Image (cartoon, rainbow, N blue to C red; front, side):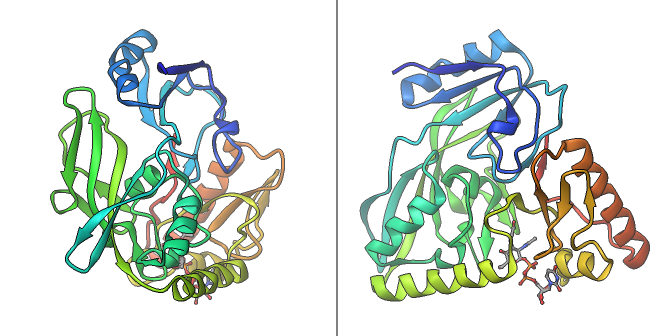
Length: 293
Ligand code: EPU
């Protein structure tokens, strides 16, 4: 259908935090032929390429964003493609919504990602961040990932050849940008009712402890080894701490929420305050989990 290009897209309309100024341009790719046009798109607009999914783990600055955005459209829903010993293989496009994939897995009775119920974002973003919750993450079910790079085009990469850790994914595909185009997951066959129950449990737990309906980007800091950043921030008095329309959630101190007209400047100032306080109290330099643009 041809690469769809949006000039000067607003990051505040493309991120769940609702923050961020205009990038240089955005390209949305729907099929393989569109990917062939990406090289020319980068050359035409300049700037730093950034692959954006559904913007649920991004804190974008208010202005001066020297970025060109690339997005995979939501065109290829999940599909059962075969069996590998006692596992079921499922293929899904990177632009699909993670909650949509989880709904499909629930109906199919396929187990492995139940803990991620309530996690927003795209499938590609979930792989690129190795999203996780309640002891499960994408690395445990990823079998192969189909990447696109400007130099190599499209190619499959086995998960075993990628480096994946806590909220970390690196396809070890060389320097330069890469885009997740498609993923192949290996899931355990189960009972739809058992899968549904486990998802309900995870979602109930999250609803009790996380501001799921607020404008947020999930946890802003990674948990330091053996500790919970949320608990450290709570103990240091950050729960509910507000600057303008940005605040640390009253429900979970590691969630930054936009109460309406928040700005990235306010968000960054709150992050600085939190980082400085935890460094002073514990000698721990908190690392951001959200991607700062
Ligand atoms: N806690 C507090 N106060 C708070 C927040 C937490 O005292 O404000 C305490 C809780 O009571 C609990 C402990 O800290 O005893 C851990 O809290 P929780 O179970 O909420 O887990 P977490 O470590 O804060 C992590 C992930 C979440 C994931 C949950 C559930 C990170 C940074 N966060 O949170 O992931 O949903 O576990 O598995 O790894 C995300 O990555 O964006 C995210 C939300």
